[in-house]
Image (cartoon, rainbow, N blue to C red; front, side, top):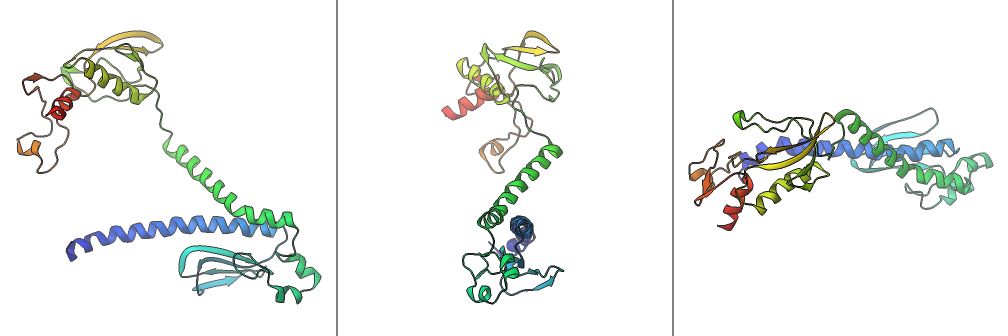
Length: 266
């Protein structure tokens, strides 16, 4: 790969890294904020709230005496509570605890009741779990939820060969085979074509506007060229996008499944 190609990839790489750091920063902040806020509710004082590790780049101290800081290694974060011997709260700072009076010791992490410490520790993962619920709920509200119901969506016009199926049709069966999902519709057409190569008319049982009915329809996917691999055999043979393949190896084609079968057999 030459230098020019690397330069053209650079903006995308930078954008990917920046997106990763933003997402990671949000996840870390929510996780550590869970520890911080529940600890505060439980009467445990936070000395440091850090996003990132390493030497402080910048920060400030709030009215409660907590130091909020940003560090250069954005691969995590921590909340250091009063009396902690390290950022992970894995051990107590015995020297600090010995110099505390009773009121300060009660505000320390080691000096808090077991249930208060348990709630504080569990709050981080719980806040991340809650964050995932909020994110997925927001996606569902904004973009909707995909459905596998066997219902026909918008169809592209196909001129005189337009499918008799209509948008909103609820498909019950194809060639006598019951379907219960949208993906099963296409599989039923493919299986029927495999069972009877060259089949050009399929029986479809459906519900339309509350009425049960049966229609005969052509294949869902015609043997048409939708795209070509640059420099591939099809392009070299002279095929272009939009071509309808009528026959292959002397066999009349009705569906794309027929074409796939012949090509695979060759």
